[in-house]
Every structure is written in structure tokens, then in C-alpha cells.
Figure 1 (cartoon, rainbow, N blue to C red):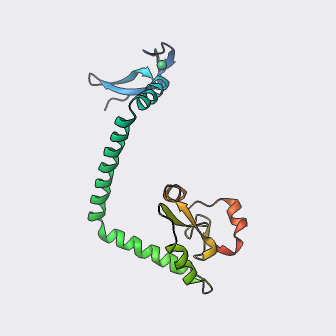
Figure 2 (spheres, rainbow, N blue to C red):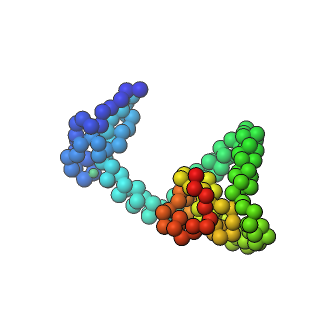
Length: 172
Ligand SMILES: [Zn+2]
């Protein structure tokens, strides 16, 4: 593929008419060549936002279709990787078992899990597989988190949390 060094050159934006370096444009393919777009990146953003506000239903529909497509891909991947998923599930179980101390109140943990509100996940405040420290699988280390927040949190730990819950962790 022909590459274009966007650090070189500049042009006028077709919309705002401001003369800007190529680095402030997006690359497009036209007539077999890769070149900077006519509109600058800032103008693209303004236009995209305006389009979204003018066509909210169309955009919503587009997102639904996009999500459905990604769901299909995910399900196909799952079908092809059954053994891998099983191994991951087993690993997760082993980690939980390993992080459960003898004094953990198991019935209380199950009760907490059963009471989880719809749309929320059970989260280990200090992750049981943290980067520098690992939390315990005990009631004091569990919380409800909106599903989306849990996915973005992954295994990150915030320092303040560590000082708040000193009894819930093993240092790696
Ligand atoms: Zn512009």
C-alpha cells in the first residue's frame, strides 16, 4: 500500500478554509492514492455530531446493527473455542478458590451474590488477580458494580482502596 507521510505538507480545509498541516486531516483513498481528506478532522467532528443530532433514530439503528454483528462474531468465536473457554472458566474457579481464606463466610457471599440487582455485576473491590496485589474472595471485598463499569475496571486497583480495605488483600 502506498503510504502518505502526514507530517509533511499542508492544505486548506474545504469547509472552514483554514490552512492546516496534513496531520490535522484524515487519510482517504481516492483514485488509487492515499491522500489527506478535503475536510479537516475538526470539521469532520462537528459534522458527525450535527448528523447524530439531526438523525438520532438512524444512528441508533446503525448502532443496533453494528452491535448485532459483533454479537454474531463473538458467538462464532465462542463456538470455535469451547475448550479454551472451559480452561479459562476452570482457571477462574481455581483463582477464586485460592483467594478464599478459611475464615470466609461462604453463605454470606452466596446471599450477597443472589441479591445482585439486575444490570449489575459482582466485583472484587481489590481484584483477586491484581497487578501488584491480590484481593481475597471475602464478603468485605465484594461490591455491586454496573456491568459496564466492571468491564472497564478490569483488574485495576486504586491506591486509596488498598488503604481502606487492609484485611482483604494478599500482597503478591
Ligand atoms: Zn476545517
